[in-house]
Length: 65
Image 1 (tube, rainbow, N blue to C red):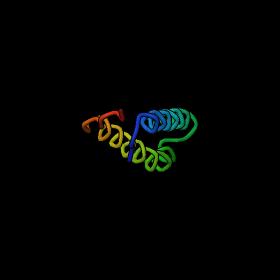
Image 2: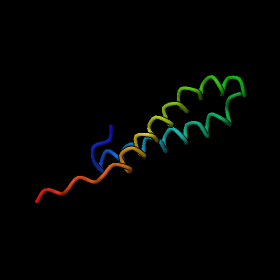
Image 3: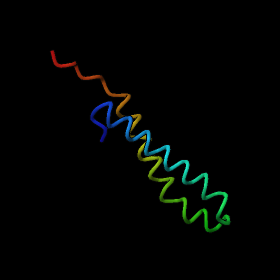
Image 4: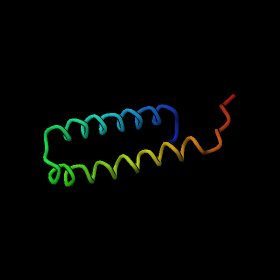
């Protein structure tokens, strides 16, 4: 679960890495192999994106004074 903006940025960077990996894999794998390879990564992307949405949807915590 994302707890602060630094973690948010890290998750966003992680998602980008997964996207780039899958883009590359689409070029080097046949369709059946790609589907098997991509499935767990696509699930991970969905889960991480949901974490981002949950974090951004939550009410911001007040800054410490």
